[in-house]
Image (tube, rainbow, N blue to C red; front, side, top):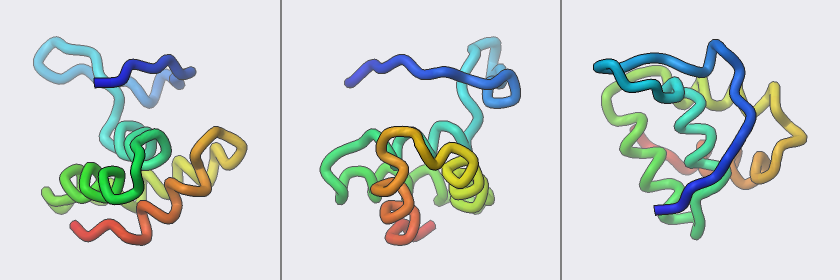
Length: 84
């Protein structure tokens, strides 16, 4: 497990079963941009997208709005390779 800190917007935070977590889109974007190596990042994003949620589109939109953040270029590649 790897722990990191990052700024969060209020709309990126939700509560699930009384536990505060990030939204699926933010979690997916963070996995895509911070997981290494590439195959592990793709596998993690595949799992996020398997339930049919539009998480890939939402994560892509998040990345477009945060294009200067670390790992965004590799995250775009991860999302291209992901298969729900």
